[in-house]
Each structure stands twice: as structure tokens, then as C-alpha cells.
Image 1 (cartoon, rainbow, N blue to C red):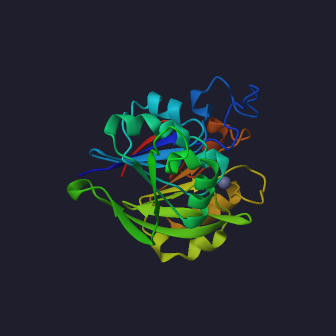
Image 2: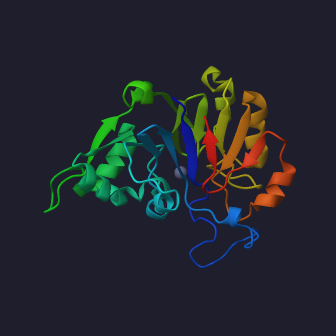
Length: 256
Ligand SMILES: [Zn+2]
């Protein structure tokens, strides 16, 4: 069975435009410059695995007509990746089943502290999610819809985020770890979805030069740049990139 990945959001932590309407260097007339906070969904039949729950999760699922979520995998604990977790409640009401959320212990600890009521009975409302600690290798979904994941840690400033590899694709939304270029598991990919915050260097994210360095070393068939800040205009960036590197845009569908 074929699978696909939809980039639900490809913006930096503030998105484009920012809350005050600021577009930075992005042309406001180009819809591809309207970016919500980073998230993606992998779809294989009825198996729908969300990567992160951005603060824009509700509008992202509505605009992509996604009516169910089977499970969630988290890259790390930052607010732009986790703050939409509360939006998952209707899926619990619909399916009468707690949604499994997969993350490492650090991120699960953060989520349980900040959103305790979603994990256990602390109020009048039932818990709606179940926490699962990820392993280096795990799989989600039944029979033909099954997807096998590999996961490992990569540096994201002073913290780290989890890189997921599945269906010859890697998702690396928040990272500044150039040592990933040495990882055998990241070679022979069809798609590399890669952090590229800015043109200028940044202490916790890849900039364009570093993202291209990673691309040239890992040599995937295609690299998709994500986590794009307000200084990254879509058309301008596209013109600077080699043929097999593309800026992401919200709603981009990749057939895996
Ligand atoms: Zn982050």
C-alpha cells in the first residue's frame, strides 16, 4: 500500500505572517509564503500518524480535510511542536479510544507536566491520550497499513530533537547537528525533510548553507526545506536552490 506525507506547516515558531501581521522579507501576495507552525502527517490507508501537534493543528487538519488521527509522534518538547495537543480531544470523543502519543522520556515528561489533564484523571474530564516511550525501531498501524520507524537523537542547540526515518523518508524539523551527515541510515533516502530556518547562522537551527551541506553529503533524491522564518521568501529561495532541493509550503503532498 502506498503512503504519503503532507506538510501541514513549514513555518518557524512565529509562523508567517507573525501574529502582528509582519511578513518580513516574504512576499505577502504569494500564498506559499503563508506558513503555519511545523507539523506533518503520514497517511497509509486509514493509518494517519501526526508528527507533532503545532499550535495551528486545528486549522491545519481542517484545511487538509483530515478527519482522524491514529497516533502522534513527537520530535521534541518546544511549544511550536507541542502546544496543539489539546486540539486532539474530538478524536477521543469520536473514537472512544485514547490516542497514543509517542515521544522520548524528556518530551513525555514535559507534556505530562504542562497538560496533566490530558494524560490522567485530574479533573472532571477523562484523559484522552496515552503516553508511549519511543524505541530506536518501532512500527505503527496494522497489516498493509503498517509503517516502520527508526528514531535517533540529533542536536538542536542545547537540547535535542528526535529524527524519524520511515518509508525512505527522514523528518528533521529542528536541528543544527552536522554530524547527521555521517549517519548511514540517512543515506539512500527518497525524501529528506530538513530544518532551514534562515540565511544567517543560528544557534539552534540549520541555516541555508548548512542545510545544503547536509543535502550534498546525504544525497537524498529530494530535499524539502522546512521551518522557514520570515526572511525566507519562497520564490527567492527557490531560485537559489539546486533542482532537487525545494522549499516546503503548507499543504505540500509527497507520495512516498
Ligand atoms: Zn525546537
